[in-house]
Image (cartoon, rainbow, N blue to C red; front, side, top):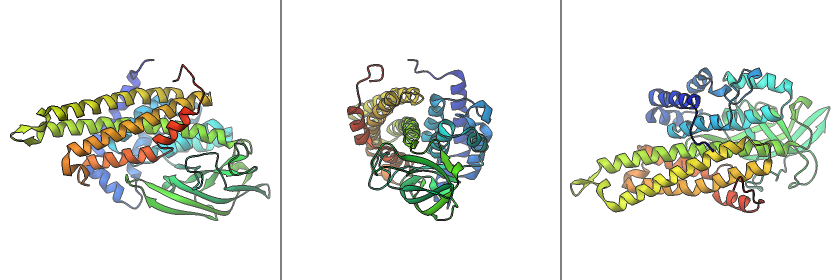
Length: 383
């Protein structure tokens, strides 16, 4: 497996690095996090102008035919810059669902608008009693006047406050934990009966608990066949996990650079503390953890496009479990080696650490994915 980026991917990486350094510095990011929206509309428009929001979509829908490794380049830089815009929710998961499972009419209507920065999406697939289990769906979908009526609740819907549409998983048949019987619907955020309890996350983003009370949608809101939506949701979440792994790698690399710079400049007993062998050993452990995480993230990105659900899920769960543990090591060591300054809001290190913690808890934590991985059949080409 080739772990090197192509020339085009390196050019994309350089473009994003320059954008972050010029327009998305730490102080600017803090201002955005404190704003009512929790993201920058100007930055979102810039992403559209750069072609980022068209990256994973087919050319016939004004896309750039990118793959999951291309998205890894984007998400790695999103981690480095702590970008707050809903790239994960709209570009990776929501847009991925429309691209993979939507009708030709729906794709033609939605995907070009995502690429132009005119539409944002959020995937509402988790419920409080199910924790990370996507098959646990109690939200009900009943036939109504040729369309559907949705009733139920979804929890911790990432980027829901800024979304124009929610992709809602709801049960059209069966019991709350059955694999079959789950349907997927595209619901306007302003639909009658839909309400959001919005809140900021620990890392500065936004999420919401969503309540649907007799929300009526037309037949065209259904994505795919009735009762077959779980596969599309699982695929979207697997790709989201791969993207989060890439984001975590970007943060770990940035944390290592910040910590190394601090060790070279902070003096104690008249010498830089980086001269102390104990701290050098800890820095080496952090570097190794970040490099191994990069390898796992690349492997997850490669398999995120696999048509084999078992192969794809095994690869992304292995990466998420490992990177969750490695990120904790890097984050904790960075905070400790910065001393008391490592946890203050004025230092970017604390924000990196918070985001790593949020990444671990999003779309399944390390323990969940380790258990998921261990319960899967052994595939030598993935394991």
